[in-house]
Amino acid sequence: MNKKRIFAFLLAASLSAGALVSCGGGETSAPAADSGSTPASETASTGGDSAEASDSGETASSDGVYQITMCYPGPADQPDYQAVMDAINELTMEELNMSFNGIQLGFGDWTDRIRLMLTGGEKLDIVPTYATQASAYVSQGLVLNLLDWNGTNLLEEYGSGIIEAVGETQTYGGQINGVLYGIPSQKEAMGTAGIVMRKDIVDELGLDYENWSTYEDLTDAFTQVHEANPELNVVVGCNMVTKFYPFDYLNDSFGVLMMDDPDNLTLEVENLFETDYYMDMAKIIHEWYTNGWVMLDAATTTETSSNLMKAGNAFCYFSPIKPGFLAQEESLTARELVTQVLYPEWDVIGSDRINFVNWGIAHQSEDPVKAMEFLEFAFTSGEFEDLLNFGIEGQHYVKMEGSDVMVTYPEGVDATNCGYHLAVGWALPNQFVGSVWEGNPEDVWDQYRACNEASLWSKAYGFIPDTSAPEIANIQTALTNVYNTYMKSIECGAVDPETIIPQMNQELYAAGLQEYMDEKQRQLDAWAEANGVS
Image (cartoon, rainbow, N blue to C red; front, side, top):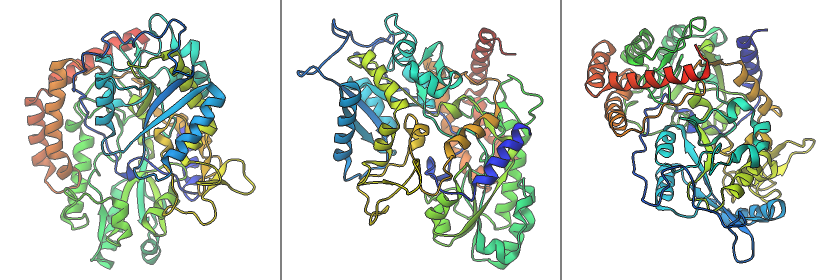
């Protein structure tokens, strides 16, 4: 059985099996980059080394115990936050003889807050880094090189358990110019997406959705839905052109490696917005919009697709799909749904998919050795993962009867009254060593690994462009501004792509797109030569 069939089988087998909290609520797309251009403070090390530790190799509190400070993302308003921090502190004291200080940052401002903490020199040891921030963090010396801190290979000397837990390919994949800035969160990385539909309408119209695989296959069904339910938006969402993407976007949208032909993968950087793929997909979406099938204010609404479905305003939306996905969406929409994977051959993994959130050590860590020992613990301890993600056993979650892996809310507790429930395992160090929430397949972590393995990996996996040079960062900012001006209206079909896409390209080139792509190509060629990739 080939890789694609393995992937399709696993996905089909799991789509009816349960829920998993996903990142971004099904509204992800190929992102423009965060230039991360906020300058480092004068206290930041320019060489990637932190302040010197004490002569003993440890910086200890008055009682001789080192305090680890870790910032991490999660939904706000966790009433039992302090109780969970106290429980984690008890665990780290017992296992590591270190105390723990957790700083939870809301998703709305966590990237800005982290940058301020790093540049302001606040006490901080463990720090998460988005892929689009990594170049700036590395160039400004805001995170340590885990392979070389003052001549010490922190990873291999003090964190070798991470290599065993994560695997060498992923462990060493988050490098820029030889600097390993962090270890990737363990999550699904495949880029497969699909369509999510109301089951009552599917059944009523007898839609044969299991044979759909492309946008073209949806035309007849959308016609039927619109005629039978003219009050509904047939499809909602704003990023429908790049919801399915057969390309490695090399950390941003400005210069990509097309991967629509798996038998002809290259290392040639191209302008995504001049490809036949982008124009053809945009034309289809524009036709849908013209037919009245797409929500008229799709380009400006701030409401999520799942909320629109819940409110009864939509028949379907597109979303990333993974093992344990269906019940998640049914919980969010309060509706019975069906799903179908589209364009399964476009299931692509590039460096950014693996290194979406990487965990490293802040430059101001008072003891990088202790920080590395803690990072190994964070990637290998299921008890730590469960505490940080789900809270205190017996109070915020319980093991389900008959399973050592599955967990759920305690009796009398649910999402409305639970005092702590992050459920953002995708953004924490290693959900694969933690418990599985009710509704998921019990073997969901194994399914994730198998789906990742079965995906089409980019020839450039392991390459992350360095866009931190001021002239390149300035171009990146200008390109992002142009992209943001046009993207939503193009990708929801509100404008004629044959007119607007050439206009956008003209402005992108005027903003420096060719120079930006040339720099990406230069760096990619050098990386490929150094790593024997052709």
